[in-house]
Length: 230
Ligand SMILES: Nc1ncnc2c1ncn2[C@@H]1O[C@H](COP(=O)(O)OP(=O)(O)OP(=O)(O)O)[C@@H](O)[C@H]1O
Ligand SMILES: [Mg+2]
Image (cartoon, rainbow, N blue to C red; front, side, top):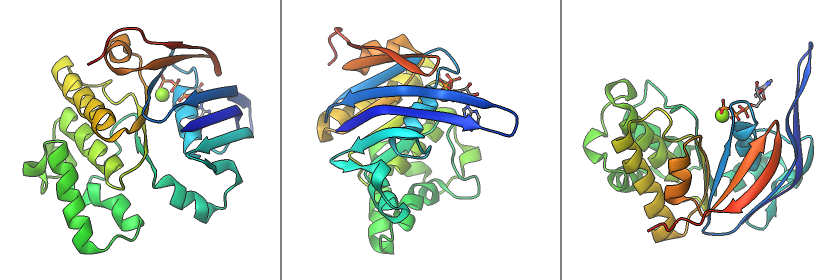
């Protein structure tokens, strides 16, 4: 489903060059939950953003589905990105839009007609258990609720792949379990392929099929998670 081949990314500014991702190759099968762990600054978020080309790689190829994203025009890329949902590190909600308004954003960008938008927003808010908060603004929500809005927004276009950047890092254990439960349900019921960056081994043991370790921009190891997961 996802295939990275020798992908590198260097951030260049007037004063320095920094290689955040160094020749990383990674395979993720359809229906897999793949964890990415590693110390702060190892390049995990950058790697995740390379999968949907929010960061443009300097070299290497990024294939999602059967499409090589690195060969695409901006227009083709916008289309292809609809199949790739993303949950950011931090919630990244738009503060002057309601819960419904936030979930609706990707649908508006995709040109979905209003009636269908309303239906889909309701469907996904119900899925994450927040239909009763649809008219609230982000500042009126708890952290766990904000993250569930971010999940509903990432799912609104019915993506095949979901990229999650530390989706539970600022949440208490109960709320974390709720969020992980939502992600697992998506994987089990709809075969959603998930790549999840985390620093919590609990998350890896609890839901990942495979896990990769990043160190100083390199992917040093990928292994099977042998814990049973329900
Ligand atoms: N836009 C940027 N410009 C310059 N350097 C950057 C940029 N984005 C990231 N970096 C650098 O690249 C390195 C990797 O960053 P990245 O955000 O991928 O790390 P991370 O593994 O996700 O860390 P954390 O666990 O703290 O979230 C860091 O040293 C960071 O300072
Ligand atoms: Mg990060």
